Image (cartoon, rainbow, N blue to C red; front, side):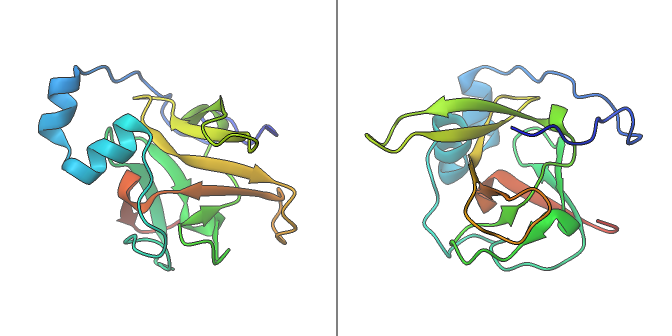
Length: 149
C-alpha cells in the first residue's frame, strides 16, 4: 500500500498495543461487533450506521478507540459500506493478504492497536480520489467522534 502521513509528523499520539483475552472482548462487544471485529465477519451492505454519514469528525476503532480515519477522507462509493481513500495515518492500520474467497484475493485492513478486523482495501477501481484506494470499512467497527475531520 502507498505510504500516507506519519502519526508523529501529524501531531498524533503513537499507537499503543491493546491486548485482551477473548473473554474480555466478548464481554465488551455485542454479538455483531464481536463477529466482525474479532472473527473477520462482515455486516450486511447498506445497513451500517455510517454508510451514508457526512458528519465531520474522526472515526475511531469501536474495539479500542484508536483514531483511524477522518471524515474528510470519506467518500461515497455506493458499495454498501463506509469508504475512505486513506487512513488517518499509516501506522493506524495493518494489512493482511486475504484469500478467503477462492479466486478473489483481497487485502484485509486491521486496527494496528488491537488487531481487530475493519474491512478491506481495494485499488484501481477508478474512483476519483487522491489515492485511487477504497478502504471499505464495516460501520460496526467504527465510532464517530464529531468535530473537525
